Image (tube, rainbow, N blue to C red; front, side):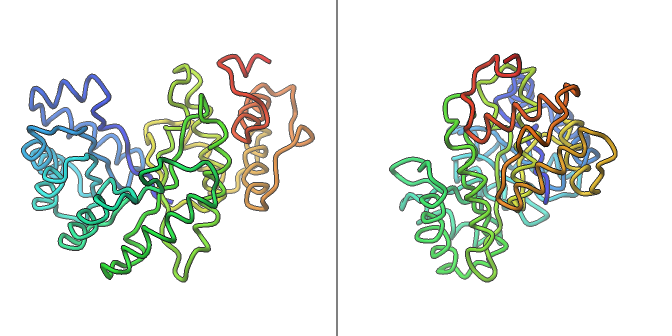
Length: 306
């Protein structure tokens, strides 16, 4: 599984300010920090940038490439900006993103083919994002994969994104997204790659609670077989959960619970109270978080105190 560093994002006031001031050193420093922390790809989210995107994206791509040598994900709805970024990119890029809407499918895959780019393809169409895993997978099978095949794109260059939504308000989507990843990993020979935007699961959640939800959900998505994860590589606790899974390190009670969550998710089973030592507050918090991600307990901002 590869981490796509999410920290260069226009939603951040500091990023927005650095774009306005054309402060390339800010972006270079942030790029280096993310790569040193384990990101193998960097997402460059400049927002729509309807007027100046065609100037901002290539400036940013060239500047970041001077500091790090990793692939870049070009994240904007402005296709002119994406194309200008692709023109100056040294490594194979990712276009972030295309939906199953016909007007997007007509223009984005040909652009990716022209510049040998990968695509993040979202399982949503004009009707929005379906709740069920099966409906999301059907969009991939009926719209996204056929278009990639029509363009003669390698399946490894198509990153199907079943769309992580927030547990605060869209809670029923959370277990379905995990299941969609699982189904997509057997949808073809070879199957398409899968991608998720991990931090979306904790949007609109109090800031101090977000990392726990992110890293717990990350373990579930890892168990389902996700290939790429847009996430914060500077989150040490997220990296620790990933390390525990990768190294099978059950040397602590919390580590053993993480491994149990991973193994049970692989087996299409659920974590239960019998798996938890409730005298360990970290284990108790992980279990409570798992329950809201399963959609078994209704999310509230006070769920950890229940």
